[in-house]
Image 1 (tube, rainbow, N blue to C red):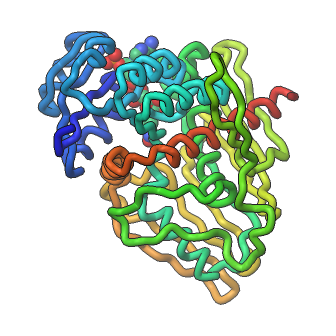
Image 2: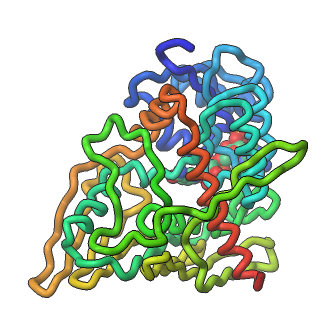
Length: 370
Ligand SMILES: NC(=O)c1ccc[n+]([C@@H]2O[C@H](COP(=O)([O-])OP(=O)(O)OC[C@H]3O[C@@H](n4cnc5c(N)ncnc54)[C@H](OP(=O)(O)O)[C@@H]3O)[C@@H](O)[C@H]2O)c1
């Protein structure tokens, strides 16, 4: 492997053009080798803009031996096929959320990744924004007392009717899209076991959370080994978050869920309420209510690189607003992905994906009455 990791992009997606590829230029240790599209014009436009070779057809990208890693911004419904093929070609993978349509496909693919010995990361960017770490620190300082409730909303106005998010066979629907962010936020603050992250480029230590409460019954996820396919051993991790209620607004016309709401609880009794959807006024909120105060932010998931996010702290003594420095979560993700590949320990990435798939699947199952 050369010092610069060589990247191939599978699918000339909007998110790649708008955010991920501009940020790649700001991250050290990467070289964009090739961009692949189903159509020659699109591949060429991306190749010209970002300085790479244009490839027509995703399979030709995987045939190349000058590529170490793939960034895959394809719709979720195509991941089963293309993640499996990329793993077959032993490429490290940064995969757009949601990783797969359900937990069983996820586990199949992770078993394959484990066998191939490659790094796989799901692209939840806000986890790598300094704002998320700052929120942890404020709560850890005891500024709001003990955490009781996390409320989060990620929803936006209707998209163009040909958007893949309205197509069932492409893995559309609000749960796998906006809902995934709200669930991941809950995992980050209420639910996950102690997953080690490659945070070498950050100044902060990963912190324990929430403070001031017993960790009894909290840290260990339910974990057992199972068998899949031809005797292959796979992990079976379950997020420690319980689904107390869940509702999905199913649209008979498109066959996808257009919105949803869920209530979750961890073993410490901390509750989360999430709303997500495709037909509201734009919202991107997180609010942390504690015994002595409330912390909120209006741009938790999508802070652009030039935004200076602000945290609002309400307490008996009054309101305080803290403006945080701007941060580039896209660049941070490229650094994180590289660190993880070079560290050679791929378990944390697999675990984060598996826990998230487990939670999303249980939210859907509950909503369907299961
Ligand atoms: N992490 C984040 O913050 C974030 C933000 C937005 C979106 N996303 C995720 O990124 C992915 C792409 O989202 P986007 O909004 O950028 O979508 P998009 O512009 O529609 O891109 C999807 C790409 O997938 C490829 N594709 C292959 N088969 C397709 C099909 N049958 N229908 C549609 N596209 C097909 C297309 O590439 P070619 O035409 O070049 O082959 C297309 O450009 C999704 O998984 C989404 O959830 C993540």
